[in-house]
Image (cartoon, rainbow, N blue to C red; front, top):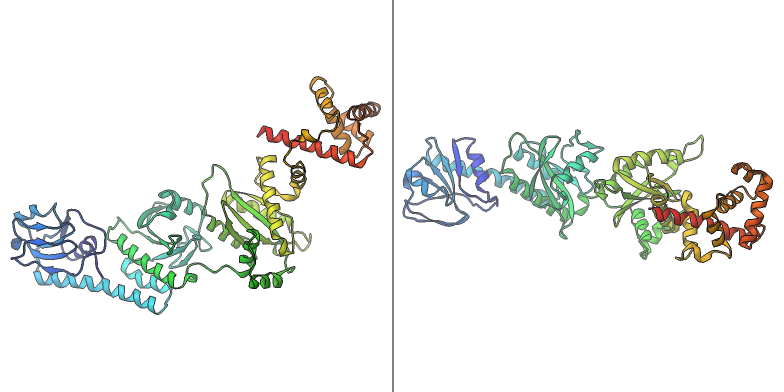
Length: 504
């Protein structure tokens, strides 16, 4: 295994009084050391040399990237300090003992490399690869999957919940270096004032697969970054050999649900799964979206936490939102024989922690209708944001009428459907202290009861009868005609909706 100057310096100073000078590369490119011979003049790139100070030429030829371990001091060293990476051993040291020590350093790291390759060859698994690396870093080495769930190593209870990072820790992770999941190479991140060395893992398509993280002890050690990157590259090879070791396979039913939501054709096997699972459970569909002006948590983390919060649930990403399906049976109160109270309580807590808005469909048990109920959840979310902007939990049942009316208008403004005389009624209300529209709304809401409507408007019953007669003459309709009455009720609701939309 090849090393770099920082690793060699870090190991040498355990046994010798050393200093390091000059520019050096973090890349692992240095082979085992060479003796510097007196008749040589050139120090080659990516070569490691061992020499004593009094045997160095006064005017050396140096290629960029050369590294020299020098025993002792000499006036000639000033010609080396800024031209190559120079590691000076200050105390008296035997040349051949230093050489043997350097060999042991390479032996140590090559033994580690061989263990990693053996683990790969034997399909030993990620946990074994990390266990075989802990002695090198001298502390636990951990791995998160792309849902920020710890899948190997020793779990850190201070920043994790049920094996996953808690939302505050993920905020720290993502905010430390902007989009942390897109960063390549070793990065130091602060978790609650504790420095942590992180290296992201990516698949062959360049997609984020997880994160290797090692808590630092004391000051930063530059030597550890490249070693962590090397370990991450070996983990990527292990994942490429067996992708399921880092990310659990989605259940067959979950994949079928996602296929139906996306209106993609089902395979023969998927149809079999759907038929076998149909009518066995009652579900609700929920659509989860990020709140505005709130730092978003990763969708994969939200989906994973959703499935942990709700028993027998499924969740997956779709564009900028997350889609979930919740089995209502585990939430049903046996005394009340109803699931809504528990669903409401758990959803409120979940979306508060995850900083989300949510739309909830009606319940269903026919899985072939998944797409319909996904559209219900989406409608609830869209209409809820408009009609109840201060809320964040929206049930389709509360906005079904709103959706029906918006769809019934066919994209035209409500005014296009006004019966003769409705504009005159609206014009009357603008100049009069008596609102005919309000009178009409209350009358229809009270099921055309003159007495109930009059009481609600604090007027006499005879006044109410007179006003309704005038409204009917003005509109040229008969409120006893169910079709005309229904059209009018839809229009009045549409006018209210358009008014709310204008105020947004």
